[in-house]
Image (cartoon, rainbow, N blue to C red; front, side, top):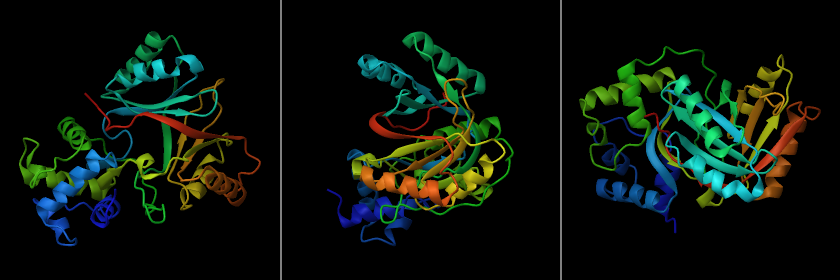
Length: 315
């Protein structure tokens, strides 16, 4: 059961996590808890499966390489194949969705070559084709989830960034896995505490890090009617369409990905999260009408089961 203190920690600290040596003590100043109570509260949220970790959320492909991938799995094999896919450390999110392509996962690796090797291994092990759908352009990727109005701040689009150095990537990969629930979490990375905090401050200011805070598991909180909407937008119009969708408070994720012809013609993706399927369907119809997408071919893929949801692994 989520009490008032737990709700406050969960909702208020998905972003703005204090970049100070004792961040949980700083959070305690604005709550009814002391430092130990804040640490225990986040620990309880983790044990209840309501948050995955406290961590920075990095801009895609700043650390290693990643892609969304999809498979069309015969229904009688779905559970077995999903377990095979999830067994790979490089696979974090892995969901069953409606539609012929019914298994969707995010794969990460230290490099583009290693990522392709991972997808090829999954194909060999399962005997099924994997559609790799790499990111081309992001319009809104934040992963924050406001439990009161479902909206999160919309950051202005950012241009290319300077790649992280090798040592920076190694530190970023460790931080992305989560901060420890200890009084001085930034001192746990075998580097000077001030160096770790300074790196996060720079990355946050530059847009390398989207936010720092609790990474929420929305399904255990009752948000189970979640739809990925995919659109086949003419390439010359996809940027405008993506920016319009990304500005809508009902859209929790929005990005352009490569098509995988002839199997998959779609190039624009958005996510709509909700508690009730009928309500989410209404929102999608509003998006189509309001953002000049009514005539654009599309598909709505509601999620059905979550096979895995964990931090990205870049080892």
